[in-house]
Image 1 (spheres, rainbow, N blue to C red):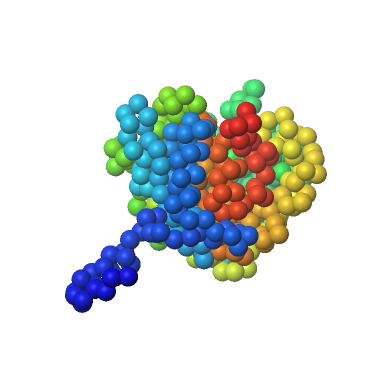
Image 2 (image 1 turned 135 degrees about the vertical axis):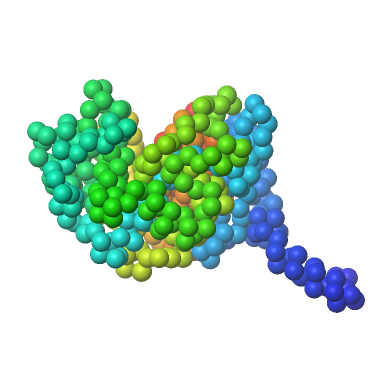
Length: 398
């Protein structure tokens, strides 16, 4: 190595090295099995996968020692306009919204402002079926002849055992109903999340966007994240694309939905996941409860006809749900995960808290989820994520 005789130049080079983002520093990334991959090799693999699977864009963060060591964006935010995707591009977060919500709810649990096992109707000043919610078509009058709604607790909402459908508008009659006795079976439900949001708004006397800003976005300096559309997003937003790279219309949410209205950036969501991995704002017992199995999952797949077909295929990982996150057990310790999906968007995040290793993947293309199985194995050595249950069918198996 050439010796630098100029002290000022040496200091400058040292500062430049220290300030260089991890994404562009040459280093090895630790996988959960103890093996490593270089950042250069990971970049090459990502670029290959995007090309092979025809994925418009990918944002990715990889964590070692509970902090991000590789954060980078690849591809395009808008294919027709050829706009590059960056780590500060605003993305539709889809059900990543629920992960932030779960974390916020657990803060309220820690502060004893809500008891997860107390029926939610006990927090309301009048019967649930008497409430109307302007602008949302989310009233609860359709439950008037089914008293089982009085059984539903916050725990059931966070672990998806309310008995509600995912969303009422997915039902043939577009009506809200209880499809099985609350607390008896896992069935993913945005309606359950929204009910808990509604009750928390009544408890705190604040709208959910204000709660999220106060308890998550401002403390973590997530300056480009919101559950409602912000005018400042207009010139820095990615769009979702279909499998041919054609853009979908970007829906701009005017009302906050904890189940799926959040917009964010990779930079911001990485800050949130760092807080998760470092257990910020939650004490250890509450954090451990959040990522502990509340209900075992036996279904072959999370959605579709196979959601009603039980199997033991995922018993080796003890697939289950915690409070706001999916959970599983591996030979390398516990793991908690959360996905996000909508037309044109496919996201996945998973943390291995016993290893301090995690990954966030956010894509803006219907083909995006088809690279997750291979990318998880390549980046962090994760061969445990139940890719078939998630419907992450690999691009070369379709």
